[in-house]
Image 1 (cartoon, each protein chain N blue to C red):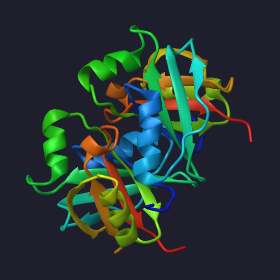
Image 2: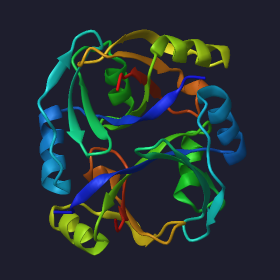
Image 3: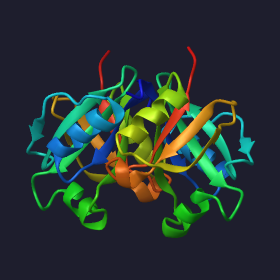
Image 4: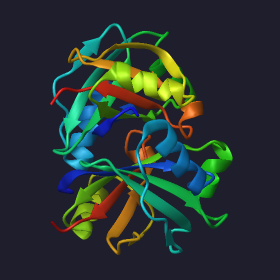
Length: 136
Length: 136
């Protein structure tokens, strides 16, 4: 089994990261942290720490990014994926593969250097799920 | 300010609640709890407790439910909304209204009797946000 250990974050794809962070602060009173870039994933992003879990705001920096394609279909942005923590990404990916779940793209690294992988939404309730290797 | 106090849950709309719960258990090794019905919201649902936050699986029981309309556009299901906790729903709704955010529908109750309200996605980054009054 993939040994899921909690909900890391919920990601919202946005066309303009600075405007999105300002809107969340002004409308909901929640503040996004520093902007980081992840060239490997073709995105720039910022986290809103809600204490028990985080919101990730993601903006594409490459037209090839899956986020860019999501925004073509949803120009205003929207809920993009949910990320779960797992202790060992290799174990988790072997387990989900054995259960018939395909990966979406290749495993990579997030802005903190944690290993991550996405699962094919067609195999997981139509929802895009990310797995993130997190050592406590 | 709406005084947001954490991430309560991420909701996934599903066409078949029992099948969805079985799929999550078989594929990700995470288990949904008892099924509850919320006639006021026109849904039946089940929570997966991940420790720090929950996944909510929701199936429509009424064709008028917004979940039914979501599934017409996304027959396989998908990420539907994210829910934040707030200490006082009236205070939160007054604050977001003053900040120009409209409600989606009327405030109501969830299956635990907590007061809830949804915000118009057009006013919050294209994402459907639920606020839930939670007393710690």
